[in-house]
Image 1 (spheres, rainbow, N blue to C red):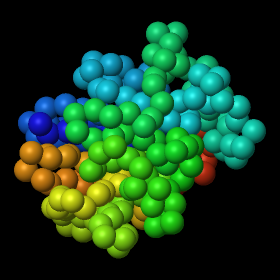
Image 2: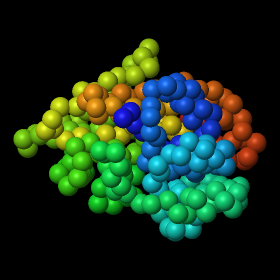
Image 3: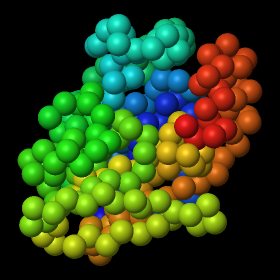
Length: 247
């Protein structure tokens, strides 16, 4: 079973289409770690695409904010403006689907899915100390998380915790990680719609646990076209500019 792992799409249909084109024929099942919407100009298009694909999806903090399941007091003004714009654009059926998304952790097909931390779906996991509880407490050998928009992750065995810097070089489409038992893994596929790790290409992963591999992919897409739609929608300029640099 090859699993296409998507995360942090953030209403960027152009990036998602580039990902699906690159991944065509390489997966059997698709999952999404949340933040389907927010920031970008295409909330209905991205939501519809996941529905068409039958993607098993958990909620992210932006999905909760847009649907009114969480308050936005802790959101910065730019993010809050995007939430309000997105809410006004969403079709009722898409809003209802987003409202009903389950929270993580969710076990499926041999992996566990979370948006942020295993114990708190809204917590960011950047450091080994933040990753340790998830590595120890997850019910699966491999757990996928999102939220940070940074591709890579962590592994743990025999009290040794390792930071995994697994990202393809600018000239590469993917970098592969070999899964070694009984080592445990907490892996982030990166963000499709708004990368923040310095590489503006859309990020995703393909897990083939039958063959003990996880591939971390990066795919270029037409950033300028997305920025033009964002300006037409009058979305905040900082959200537009950060797509260029992947920060």
